[in-house]
Image (tube, rainbow, N blue to C red; front, side, top):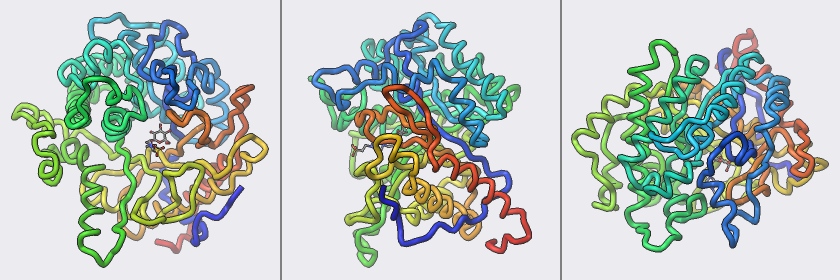
Length: 468
Ligand code: GBH
């Protein structure tokens, strides 16, 4: 495997003593058990079985079979010394038909309840995402899911209420939505992710992606406020949302047009959701200027909701993988869209901190190695170790040199899994999964993370920590 990721060497800089590290996954990507124990179909069950295939001929009916192997997987995690495990709940396991008047599936609830108990028994804190892309198929059939703001908001609120009631006594950190940008643009504009809505007859790609975004923002605000009003005092947890985004470098630093373009890209990518959610403000003015009335308008009542909900968000959940510009910014990894660019990461940490002033938790970061295939080549994953090392160094620089607050880091992903429309090709795991035998093997990057977090946190409170 290729090893070079950057001109820079990993320095293993200090991280704060209380800095939490963990791993992350999503239900559809790992669980399998597609119709086990009363689970209803989700839009991903449908999408991954379409013909002709839009997912490289592959589906996640079985995936890592995590649904039947949680004990093994938690033991592996525990052996790596993680503090945290971020996973998502499949809505259609809890309410197979999705809606607020539909029956609850106790067997689905039992699965997540046991998962949480087992994590806690191993001293691993659960971080729970309510929505990681797998809407119940029934609500999409009934009213287009995200395309009907009021219906979705009410159904999501009901689903979230059940989750807080049943799991909230053991969960200290909640995420409402994973990556609203991807849900809006990839699932409803270019159609490479479920439901691939724009490919259907009669869809309107001029307005629909922006309606989807609107729905997510309002549903998040409703649920965050409900959590604060009904659950937070007794359950003592935190809630927020996870936003993704590459950093954008101006193609030519000397050009003010390029600098504006890069900044505009960040506003469309991140502030689209960040400004309404974290600041309680309207969409960025530049979005209105470009999109006009293709972009929905918040009513006075909705603005009030946003303003009341904004202070409830306890952290900024940041998924980050790479940097873009008009030219190549680093060596290629195992997928075309991801290049190794830790400096961009550091700049984006600063950009987010400056705009939102919330403690940042890196809720996903990782990469596949170039040429990574079977276990014989995958386990000695130097490229990934180097990527992790460089990105962790960038966090240290942001914390100690730039004074940005970063509280945690969750590697994507705990194990190789179903990479959505790319199927089982790209492997992001720190644990290798053989998809024939379902055997798990910890990769060297897993051990690397275990050791480097121990070392980096030790440095921060040793006398030798001259870095600060
Ligand atoms: C995250 O999305 C997801 O939260 C996670 O589920 C996923 O497994 C992980 O990243 C790794 O991808 O092939 O050019 O069409 C990150 C956003 C959106 C990045 C889809 C890759 C496909 C680009 N991802 N995108 S392309």
